[in-house]
Length: 345
Image 1 (cartoon, helix red, strand yellow):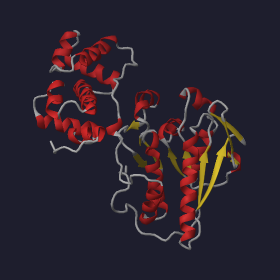
Image 2 (tube, helix red, strand yellow):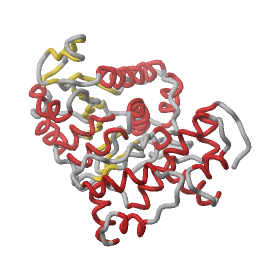
Image 3 (cartoon, helix red, strand yellow):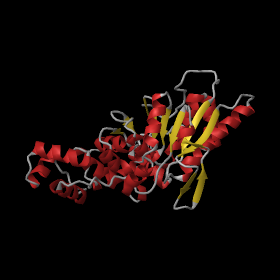
Image 4 (cartoon, helix red, strand yellow):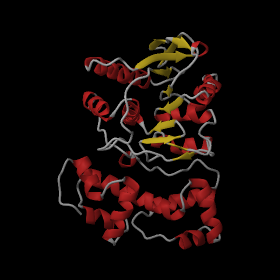
């Protein structure tokens, strides 16, 4: 799994030679921007290549189940270039973000699934943007592999696709020619990653400047809002979650929770993990850090005050757990949302 493109190229130098056929799918209930943005990116790079006296590289097509696809409750109409049956060969399939009720949306687009699998088996790479990961996962190609999607849909994704390993903090994943991106605008970083892979580092940098994209973003962790995982049927565990969330300032042990809800510790830990996808300790940490994030965003308290407010007394431990969950330090997080520049802590 890659990190986002950083200060040095992750791909060997190469000559830009063969045309790449790009199939951008236009599913029912697609998010309009995630259809047009990839097309815009690849078309812009073609123009950059022509300006450098090189041949354009990308042959881009909008591919659908019908010639006309209505989006956003009919507010927009996309005319596709090709139907899926008209595509003989493609090098890259891009699955845009989806909207609406996901189960219904996937049902409407199920005819794409065997087509994606067929072309993947013929050598095509496949990239999902944001919650387009649900469509890629529906093909079965991600089973046993890692994938990212928008963090807010993480619980729903894990519930629907338990055989896929969701890494919801990552901006980009790549495994066996299958790519995915994190939430919302994160897909621009995946597009940059693909541009560098198919062209070179200098072209990726040029594209990043043209589209004003931070080329080295690696994580969506600072943007994740932890709301707990309550969509399960284990009532004692739900009560334990509520207790944790109502006692953020307290130091709560797993032993205490198990006794409070009259469940043996080991059995409690197994049930908690099954229901929430977190161990009890992880859940306690994430609840406390989410509370700390909200206080830091307001900028009314310093880091030490916030640390004590969420039940930590060890500065090193608080900083370590905060950075593990958000990807940045408490001070960096506070500065990010308040616009302040304060001393490192």
